[in-house]
Image (cartoon, rainbow, N blue to C red; front, top):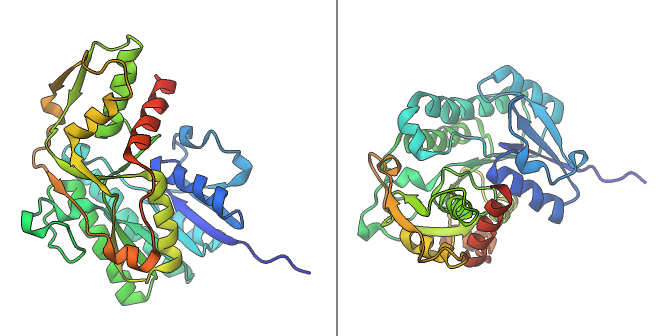
Length: 327
């Protein structure tokens, strides 16, 4: 009796924050799936070190190299593609706008072209961003998928373009992609340039006497809706298995607060609370900021039944413990 053929999932950005957690989720919940990951020769492997390398396969290529992507599609013929690779740091996009646009827009277009040229028929998750909405008006909260785009950074502009080129490939070629606009998600392995992780790293350094008792911050008055990355990757799996190609979905957590309130929660897990000063670093303030991000996720929840389950307190404590081991 023949064994059933395993489904093949390809993850771009497999070595990143979300990509590595997606590998964890698939291995734990869907062992019948073969996992492939797109990497560059210089991709850091830290986020995958806890996983035996025989449980996934890395494929070397680059989003800027159409030939390498086309070859990869021919070799693997994935049924599912999670496109997570991106230049994802808003602040650095002001310093490197061209690189941000090339990576996120041209890179995504190359991926879609490789799929089209290879004549394969996968379901593709295109990871857009809540940043496409920019600074919304109070009457537009909670934010629906039909809300106008007002991108406030080169990163946000790149995500608008990525979002729209994916939609165009669905309309023109029937390439079965589904777009998400994920709101703030965090947890262990989050890059240190992002607020929650930056705060946690500084707290861990101060606890060990490796940094003066000062936590450097940006705008603490911005309002965000937080979710855990481990809830996010479960949402992404449900997306490619239950949602409709050509559609776009907001996804976000159920805890909304100011960045400063989130920092207070994080400090609750540390003996330095009340002993460290909080100071604004002008370099952490954006040239044009987005200060109100509260999503309407009813469309996604209605189609998948997904709910954010992990409390923000656990997310923050796990993030702090991650940095305590790292510093």
